[in-house]
Every structure is written in C-alpha cells, then in structure tokens.
Amino acid sequence: MEELTVTKTDLARRTREVLDQVRKRNVRVLVTRHGRPEVAIVDIDEYRALVTARERLRQLERDEELIQQVVTRCGVSRDEARLRIAEARQNVYALVEQAHERNPDVPPDVIDALVEDAREATRGQR
Image 1 (cartoon, rainbow, N blue to C red):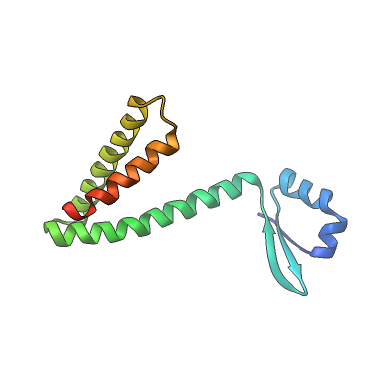
Image 2 (cartoon, helix red, strand yellow):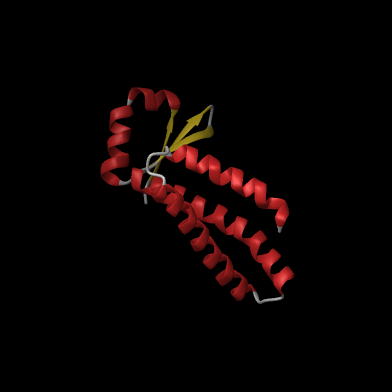
C-alpha cells in the first residue's frame, strides 16, 4: 500500500485531492507538523479493521487475567479455562438479552444499570 506524507499546510491546500487518493487509490496519508508525524488518514475500511483489531486485543488482554484466575482457582489447563470463560460469557450475555426482552417497556439503559447494580450487589457473595 502506498503511503503519502504531507504537511498540515499542504493538506489544507489540497484536502480534496488527498482525500480522493485515500478513497480511490487506498493511499495512507501521514500528516506532519514541523517535520513530525501528527495524524494519519486512512480509508474507512482500514480504519474499521484497526478499531476491530484493537478491540480484539483489549479483549484478549482482559481474558488473560480471567484465564489465570480460572487456572489458579480451578486447577484446569489454559485451554479448559478459555472454554469455561467462553461458555460463561455466552450465558451472561444470554441473561442480559433475556432481561431486555422480558422488559420491553423499560429503556435499555435502565436495564443495563440494573444489571450493573446486580453485579455489584452479588460481587461479595461468591
């Protein structure tokens, strides 16, 4: 993939042309200020892929802590811990979805707040 470097001043003068290159030719643009990179401009599909990848990485980082807890507390392998976490996650998501479905006249953000309240209330009971 081609990469183009432009200054902020140049970008201000050639915005339309630069954006057309990003959109039509799939060019990445690095915008500099005083010779230092300041921002990048990428095609919307690449942006979405980057956001998805970052969210997936964050989920993996959060899961790593959970995996360690399950391995330590339950004495199972990492693979077994991953399976247990995946199953538990599906069950919890299903319960939240059921709460939304069973209370169609209650705004979703209220249900979400109640789920959070229940989470906090049951935290010390385990």
